[in-house]
Amino acid sequence: MTDVLAVERLTFGFDALAHRDRQVVFVPYGAPGDHVVAETVERHAQFVRARIVEVAEPGPARVLPGCRYFPTCGGCQWQHVAPPAQRDAKAAIVAEQLARTAGVRDAEVLPTLAARDWQYRARITLVVEGRRAGYHRARSHRLLEVEDCPIADPVLSAHLDAARDWVGALRVPLRRVSLAVAPGGVVLTAIASALPGTHDLEVTTELLARMPTVRGAVLADARAERRLVAGDPRVRVALEPGLDLEVPADVFTQVNPDANRLLVASVIALGGFAPGERVLDLYAGAGNFTLPIARRGACVVGIERNPVAAAAGPRNALRLGLGGVAFETGAVHDALARRAPGSVDAVVLDPPRAGAADAIAALVALRSRRIVYVSCDPATLARDVRLLAAHGYRVARVQPIDLFPQTFHVEAVTSLLLT
Image 1 (cartoon, one colour):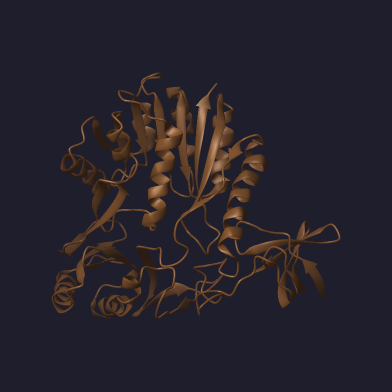
Image 2: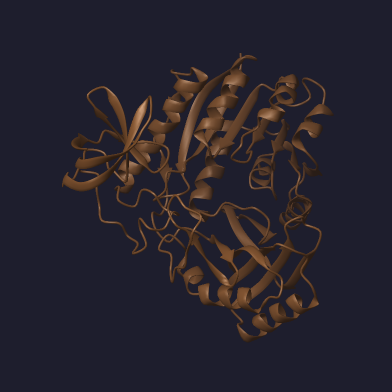
């Protein structure tokens, strides 16, 4: 069965939304304003899913994709949509999730901030199958080997063959391999399915000697029982003028350096941190927000579970001459439980995609006046905002940021005030 559908808007994922009479129809790779001939492929009680047979009349937001692998590759979902329309959709998705899940309909959701639309990624991660490495195909776990990636920094695309050479030379089987931009070239990191050994370190050292632009490499097993390092594995992340991080490449950093500076600036602006204030930075990593907050004169403690990341934080604070900053290694819930109500003026948290539901009870017990919540998933953000609202916190402002152009992913910085 085919119909001509008017595509209304993008949703959080591959799909655009249309209606057939009053029935919801999800249409992968539709663009707002399109009129498409679509064929139904799945029927459900509340909706149907259709595939586009023909774009009868393209909408004003439809553009030509910028990558030869789109839409076969699953890394990008929105390359067929103009960047301004992508950013409008991301702000609308954040607002919709807050309204639907958290019941927050009066929050000020600002226009989405963005930097570059292409060549923005300073790190890419490839899935490894045997001696092959690539991305997953769209809506699949099948591998797609690529020769370049237009959303990645060109230096990463130029070193894809080096990464594959490394995969082929290692004896230990890998799960994934990453390439990160580093001063003078790239750094390779990999997660192995077993403990890496002496041979793996030897071939890694040989690769670095043969290719000087591969500055370093880190090879670790999935359980973090062994971590082999060759060369100089550090990357540098500029946070704001005159302030940058130096961290091992296997420590989490945002993949979009330009947009990360917008993210840091938004946290600082919405947090309004004053000299002498007591601030907790939860899920702090190596100090992406901790150090800029300390620069404002606040007394800030970063809480981070990963010991490699937590150790990098104090080293950077010392290198940068920042006082009033400390890092604790451990689980967020445990760190919060050790603190008395009223002992903290403001809290920043940047949890993983699953959100911070397991820490909300301990967080609200602190009764801090302000919370700045950084989220990469509007659904878990809205869920946690609902929990915070039940304990007296009100959403003041939300700043979406497009850290991942050409995809449906959106970062949002939300400020909450205790009423």
